[in-house]
Length: 293
Image (cartoon, rainbow, N blue to C red):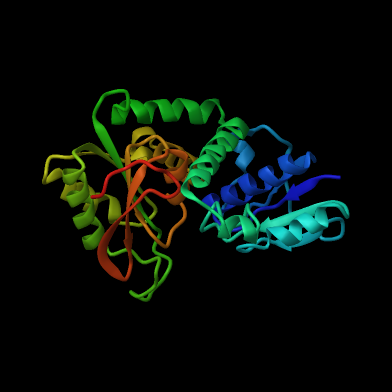
């Protein structure tokens, strides 16, 4: 018997799915296998950049003829645990919006408290760092980015994530308002006494616009892709994700999960903004640290 995970959607959503499935496999003491499908959402093979502590294969299609397919949404974990005893199970996706929502059953969520949230977040970090290790190329680039940011100093750093523009309509949740983001970035960096801002963006024009705004108030900016100068989408994604995990603060969009997982892995506070609101919200999900903005 084994638990076969074939995650879908973007990089962070896939990691949510993998981490949740690893927890189920450990709970039931059954082998874990990851099948990674390269597609337009995540156009690279994880094994090209990350060493995993479990078997990893590249797949063309889901093996529906050999596994029970179960899409994980919200509290559907109960149905998966019922199927495990019947044979191999394949988990193909997850909503990605909350680590807690799809690794516990209904009764666990309804009786959740802050102490359990804190313990679970620590389990999330442990599971991630025990099972994922950057390869030599990624490690060398990460070190170069750390030096550019000067992460070993006592200065505070903030990560600014700008979501890709995937919609033509200005009301689309994934279309960033650069003026608003630059305003937030400047206000948060000053208020939180951040000396350096790390800009992670797949949106054209966003990087220079935000850099200019921060420079006007004397905040240093670092763009990871400019440090090593490689335009390789998979490498860029992995470096951006891992470096966000090491910063002190985050400015991220509520509707995007790419920076939400680094916030948990880095045990940091984040200022979360919404596409439809000019209100800033301080977020410390499932951790007991952080003061209000």
